[in-house]
Length: 322
Ligand code: MN
Ligand code: MN
View 1 (cartoon, rainbow, N blue to C red):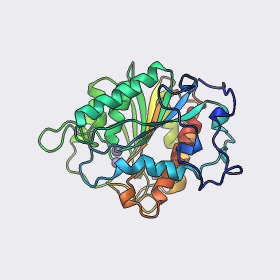
View 2 (view 1 turned 120 degrees about the horizontal axis):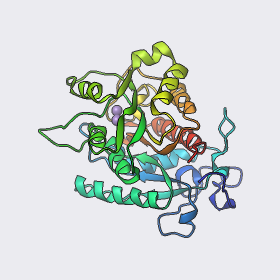
View 3 (view 1 turned 90 degrees about the vertical axis):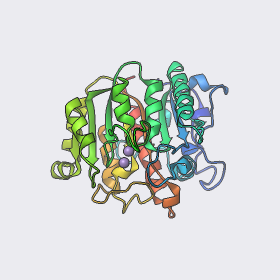
View 4 (view 1 turned 180 degrees about the horizontal axis):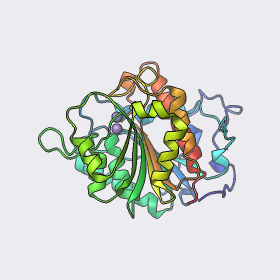
């Protein structure tokens, strides 16, 4: 899917031509190409909004994330400042629109989203999703995984709990427990980075240890530094296909207050970007940035950081061998 830019159709609108405050917001000012639209079959990487937060167990709001991320992403330009990568010249990228949730039914939403992402897999499109809460990752994985994937997961939380509220299996605290049970992910090729905060109990940690999931707590992250930690993460996932999932609450709430379950003592906004710069050349089959919650983000700073992280993830995805 790489190196096949055909013409200017897939080029974002330049801020030199139309000021960035003008025009209709799409992700990174890309063309809007929903499934079935002309040239949909030429898309290599699809940016998708998942405006759904029915898995949220505490403070809601990420259903408003995609719209705010699109607005913030109009600040993004064409070239990565460090690597020099110009992602939109390497792979045809487009905004595929929103994957339609049903806020009255978790199961129906999961099914709709799974079908949407399965369609992207059939079309050979790799998704970069803006959430939505972290339960969104489960139907994405159901749609795109045809064999257990590895995963690099940035988060304050493991999201590996068995269930909430007396047996409810589908929340934003449980997606990766389900994904491992359903063999969408290979637990021995999962690394979770940034884990911290008070806990209900150790049930998720015990599960991770028994399944072989590698947890790099925030203390270890700061002791070793970004390059060392990400070097280990790359060894864990190896050269086989993987997914990258990025919960904005990985970042310290000083820099990303607009999220439902903040945890203090986290990475700064530079480190939030820096970790993504170590994802180059991995076989990334999809990625997401979740848990941006505009009701808790009155300055818009969290959404702008989220959009900036999405650009970093995109720059990694265009170097992927597949
Ligand atoms: Mn999460
Ligand atoms: Mn989290």
